[in-house]
Image 1 (tube, rainbow, N blue to C red):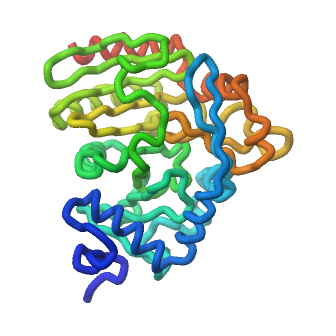
Image 2 (cartoon, one colour):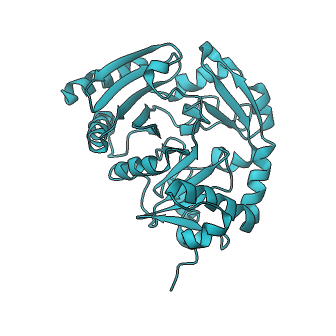
Length: 332
C-alpha cells in the first residue's frame, strides 16, 4: 500500500521540473501551495513580512518581523514539556494535506511557517533524538544535491531546535543569509587557519560578533573526519553526554563550506515576554537573519541588542581560543 505522505516525480510533473532533487523540492513547494491551505497562507504571510537591515560593526543583519514564527521562538523546550506534547514531526501527526519527498531515512517537507522564500524541514522518518553525530554525512549529501538552490541548516537540541526530540534539518533559499561563504570574504575580524590542505581546510573565524569553525573542501569523507574531531573537542566540557551546543550552516558551491557555531547559551539574557524580547537565535540568526515574531521587538531591536545577543549566546573568546588550539593539535 502506498504511503499517502510520499510523492514522486510522476505526481509532481504537472507542477514543474523533476529532473534533480533540487528541482523536485522546488516543484513540491508549488504543489503544496496548490493543495495545502495552511502552507499557502504561510507563504502569503511571508510576502508581507517586514524586514530592515542593521549593520553593527559593519556586519549586515536582516531583522525580520515574522509573526508566524512565534510558536518556534517561544517554544518550551524543557524536557518535561517536550515529553508531554505531541511530536509535530512524526509521520502520524503530519497534516493529511502534507506531502514529502523520500530521501533515505529522511523526508523533505515544505515548512508552513517559512523564514526563507523556499523553506523546508527534513525530519528523520523515525522519532529519534536531535543529534548530529551519525547524521552529518546525510547533511553533506543533502547539501550536495540541493546546494544549487538551497542551503542546509542544523540546530542543536539546546540551540534553537523547536523539536529537540526528533532529528531534523532545515533548508532555505541559497544566498538569503548574509553570512560570507568563505572566510576570505569576511566582514573584518580574523580568520585563523587551523588546518590547510589541498582537500580540506579548517579555519577559525571571528568577525567581531560571532565565532565559528569553518570546514571547506571537495572530499566529503575528509570534511566528515574533521567535523568528528571538532565535535569531540567541543564535547570535552559536556558533563552528561549531551551534544555540544552548536548551530550548523552548510553550503555547496562546487565544494562544501560547513560553518559550525559553538554556543554557550540557548537564549540571550534579555529573552522574555515581560519587558524582554522574544528572540531565540538559531542557525538562520547566526547566518544573518534575525527573526522577531513580535512587532515591538522588531521596532525596538538595534545594533546594541545584536551585539549583546551574540555576546550572550556565542562561545566566549577565551573558550574559542582554547577550542582552536585543541583542534589544531588533534588535527595534527
